[in-house]
Image (cartoon, rainbow, N blue to C red; front, side, top):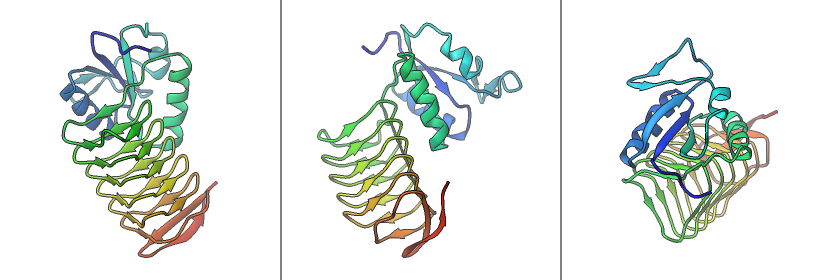
Length: 213
């Protein structure tokens, strides 16, 4: 779909992450308001209004409306983005003015790159991915759909992740590492070996400490 004008942005998810996405969106020229399933008990987030629940958002005319999903939980974010995409809402790629994204990188719908982050040449970022503040995605990395690369995390060249991967704050991943689907890497970890799907790893060096359902 062609990006609509005027630039109104509905943000689904009125949380701390929602505040960061709203701030980014305003710097890109969007007029921002929220939808959240806590409505009507919750009617605002700071100075931004909450206009209804996610079901109310789906009833809106999508002609002049972009939507960002600001939900940190990878599974819920995927559910919401898949539904909005099915209903043909426009899901923009949001890149903070103080992020650095190579002209040769590829980003997919609904992805967000926050302040200070670096996405280097020929990296590929999937749908609904969060590249959080000051994260580094080096050359030729492939980040699977609906993953979250947390603040101050660094992925060296050629790292590949599956879908719904969470790389915790301050973690480091060695070059050419492969990470399976539904993997959680704990904060401050150093990953030196491949990780299979559906695992949680933690430590320096990181070791598998649990299996994920």
